[in-house]
Structure formats: C-alpha cells, structure tokens
Image (cartoon, rainbow, N blue to C red; front, side, top):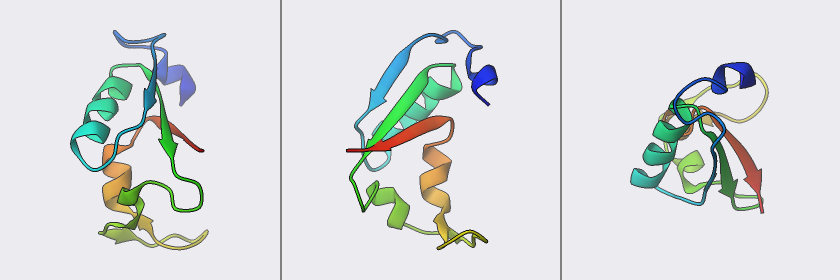
Length: 81
C-alpha cells in the first residue's frame, strides 16, 4: 500500500490530520488520495469520534468497525496521543 501512495501530485508531502467530524477528515482524505502521507492523530483509548458512528461492519478480529470512519479516513495512518 505504501508503494502506491508514492504516486500522485502530492507525493512526498506529509500532512498531520487533527480534524474531526466530516469536513476536515474528507479534506485530508482527498490529500491522501492525491498521494500525500496523512497521519491522523486520535485520542488515546477512545480514538476519533467517528469510530463510534454507524453503520457498523462486523469484524472477525474484534468489535464491529465503523463504516463511516473508514469511508472518510482511507489511505491514512493513525496514531493516538
């Protein structure tokens, strides 16, 4: 996956994503889609608010995952601090 991210007009750009809700994550998702390396910063223990919003997708490896969260945070890396 990282090899594919090296392509695009924003390849080589690193973006720190401190956004929440819809507009900010959508904007940084677009930057990631264009090749930027986007690092999303989330709250420890809780994660981003969007992780608790449905619809939820069943997971074999743990609790259900938020489809909404993954729809606006694709191509990003996440850290908690």
